[in-house]
Image (cartoon, rainbow, N blue to C red):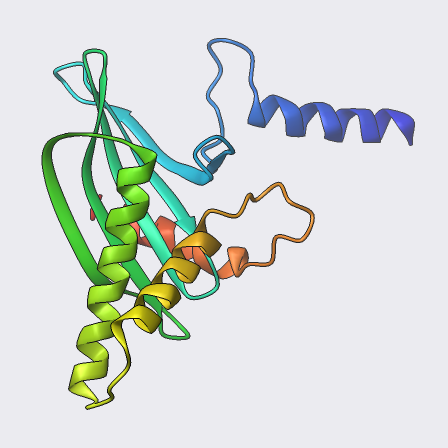
Length: 174
């Protein structure tokens, strides 16, 4: 029995962190310093590196498209998705050209995008809500997306979200 457990554990760890030259099983990687999953990483023919970063809470997902050019890190776009029960729907998107990636900038842009979405929905439904209240709700939603996956009380729809992200990525939408 000990030999079987040892083999299972060795195979598991070898697939996650293989020896040099062996293929690695593609799974999203949690980056605790950025509080997001790295779901896709690739190198262009010009030698620039890109990755897709995802953070989420129980209501929204933030997808960052990030590029490394020479020694600089740029944000290429931010996409906000809302859950409708079955799928993720794009609710806001911003593209950037040669904007340095900065965590405070990403957070502020994300909050602004949520505010704009909520304000638009409120106007369409003819509901009057003070802008301060909408701002507080947007800030709360975005703060929820910055919770560490490594926290013991991390409560998410992870099993529902990651397959949707894989489908999103496989459809060539990155």
